[in-house]
Image 1 (cartoon, rainbow, N blue to C red):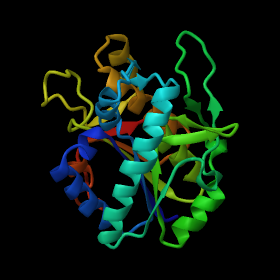
Image 2: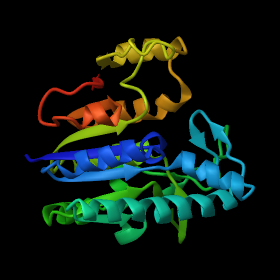
Image 3: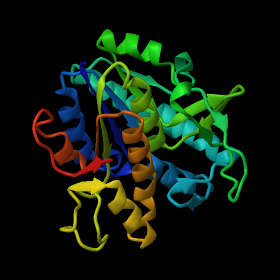
Length: 262
């Protein structure tokens, strides 16, 4: 099977002009089929403060009330998404900006209230992905650029970008050998968040569970790890976590960062 790159970026790349320029240049040089997923949480938080909308986070996930839903729809699906698409087109990459609502790409279910009311947040599974349409687009050399938004019952829903990346990877693993890459501000998953040299190059599930029980992980890395192991269990070939510069450099060779192992 052909290789497919599914790459998720967050605010650490989006908010740094130099890092974003380098990332988009590297991303555009990948010749295999590819999908980009982006959040934009830091920008949404900044603009939200200017509009009097205070961000609330629980375990690295945003609480989405009605005002916040409008905010992230505008920022993720509009400002950030279309700027990325325009820049990729300039680099010769035929990008198509989408949310889960476009082409019914990703259906969702509004998250039920349990211990925490997350508000207008969508829960998704691989079965919710319109993989036939995505496969067609990829075969036409179109590069989907997903904002972290899905839909249900006629409304947009905020959905964790790491989860979207993982679910897309699982759904498309029947068509491609998928390399799923989570880009964030560190060089990889660290044993000690205070020690930059403590990157775990190979993270086995047993080690992950031990470190999780010890409370070794920062909240921000938890959604990535949860989704990484879900993807590996569901047939995704490779999951890498680390900073964009190292993970996208020489993509056909050995890369740095943390490689997730079942």
